[in-house]
Image (cartoon, rainbow, N blue to C red; front, top):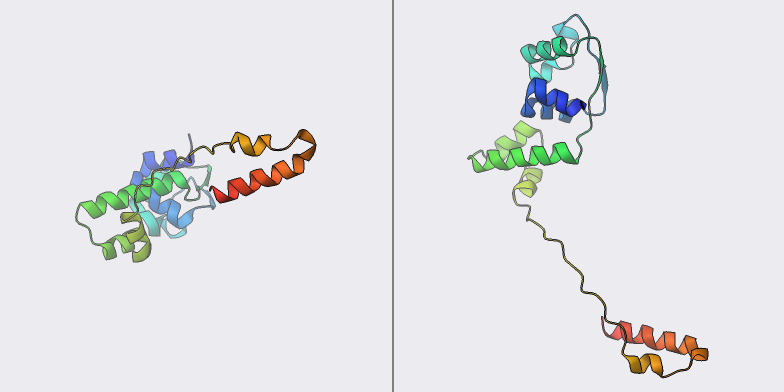
Length: 151
């Protein structure tokens, strides 16, 4: 099981997201004895949840993942649902430890549709048929000129 899934199972999505945002990219040894003053998770998720995490994962090294595309999209969807529920942008910025501008960009992000490029048409036969095979360079120049003019 991946660390992200483990954190989500033990802490829930929102707290797991906070842990990844705050401590992403770092490795921690989870002690078998819970000590609140030495636990790096306490300021982020609280003593009760930190103790629960410590009991569930005691004695292992925990590599906290970096906020990747998957967890970023989960965070963004959570921001959108909070905003649609009536939460103000300033409160969302505090809650997710982001700037108001970043929150606005997430909220106002348009759904992009991938543009499909039209296939290029080959040059007309008269351009290619003007020269014999020995004049390949002139033929190439004419084709390039035609393609430049018809973009």
